[in-house]
Amino acid sequence: MSRTAIIAGRGALPAILARAIDDPQVYALEGFEPDGIKATPFRLERLVPFLDHLHQERIDRVVFAGAIQRPRLDPESFDQRTAMLVPRILTAMQSGDDAALRTVLDIFEENDLSISSASEIAPDLTPDEGVIVGEVTTADRRDAALAARIVETLGPLDVGQGAVVAQGLCLAIESLPGTRAMLEFAGQHTHLRPRADGARGMLWKAPKPGQDLRIDMPTIGPDTVDQAAEAGLGGIAWQAGKVILLDRDESVRRAEAAGIFLWSAGPFDGQQG
Image (cartoon, rainbow, N blue to C red; front, top):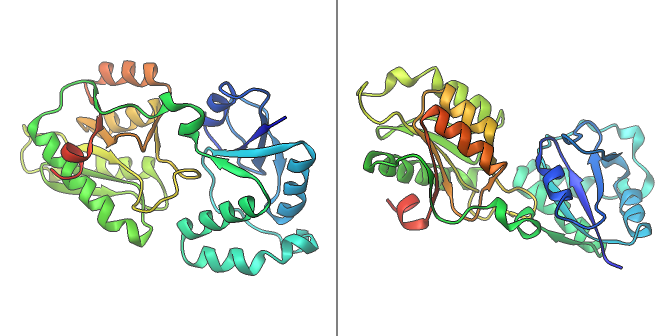
């Protein structure tokens, strides 16, 4: 019988996916346990024995979900077989997060484990094109188009998955500290908008070009809505079909309360202006 394992990180996504899977087995990299669901911890230093355990549990498919950061590795904790993978993993890490994640996927697949994306498990997590709540103005559409070009242009540099643009000016780009830090920074610089009565600006989220969405799909949710509102922005837009919206009903409720829009943008209105 086929079984699926969730390789979980922090946040609510692993628990959401677990509800969509029959008899899910949930594991988490030690130190990055998910919210709302129990997970069996494992260490990267013993990756090969962990893969053996998955096979012993008759698991043949895995889905990665949740946020992690690069863990601190203990050289003395590596077993002999996992130690043989270290040069390969370290070389990939030196090439950036995208290369490191692709290497992880390769190792799982080489061990006869297929990989599904979160959106394959729960398609409703990625909304279709359209404005979900609020009003998107012509100025907002121009800002979204510019933000999308910024993220796409910076993608090859492995920088981030988001940008904040207001009235044609980039207030912030996402980097290693993440979306919350970007929005806090943008909120501190809203005075740079040329017109106080003009567009308040918006957050754009999208994957980097070539990003493997099976392991690293951008995610927004109710907390992102709160953070965008606190930053004084007019809304959040993202690339339709390639960004996860967590807890849609609660995200919409908070967006309505804050008076901001949520917009799942198609390629013509979101990326080509």
